[in-house]
Length: 156
Image 1 (cartoon, helix red, strand yellow):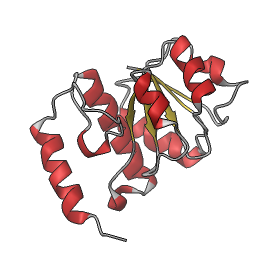
Image 2 (cartoon, rainbow, N blue to C red; image 1 turned 135 degrees about the vertical axis):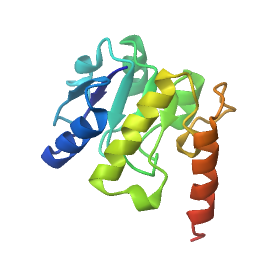
Image 3 (cartoon, rainbow, N blue to C red; image 1 turned 90 degrees about the vertical axis):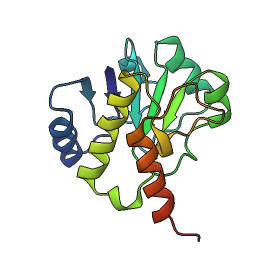
Image 4 (tube, helix red, strand yellow; image 1 turned 45 degrees about the vertical axis):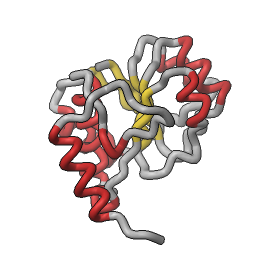
């Protein structure tokens, strides 16, 4: 898949490159996603963002017009993404749901796992943030991961 990651720090760059092992066409930039940098997403399938990148309705429309149809946030929250609009525009959205994987290496591995699953036409399981029933079928791997994630979550 062709993906661009915004707001990448030096240590994240190395972790993502290692986890990717040259499988996907990744562009890693340190700039935040905004009106000036959205142009770098042209021709990409996926944007990988941080919580500092705001994906409001306007930004989502810009991304869609450039060919982007999938979003990964490198966090377990999605408040920086207008999920209602993203769903209406048929974006696939994923986060990093496993609390024990919030280390840089774990996040990088999950991001690449999401890309691998999407490339294979599969659902990302518990990481799926789409607000409707996903047309993609979960794999045994994602079902097992979902069960582990549910078992590991604590009520706050």
